[in-house]
Image (cartoon, rainbow, N blue to C red; front, side, top):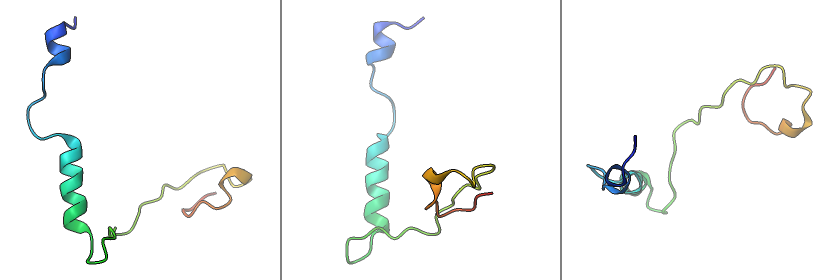
Length: 61
């Protein structure tokens, strides 16, 4: 059972968007562009005839 106190309490630790902000600031280059390593795309199965994913950069079959 939820109570008003459990819903409105401030969580412990740093907020998620503060952590993401720090990561982005630490990973960006001198040109202020975030450099990401390889992006992992999922392999899509049984969708090769779907025109809605014609430009999907990952593997499909």
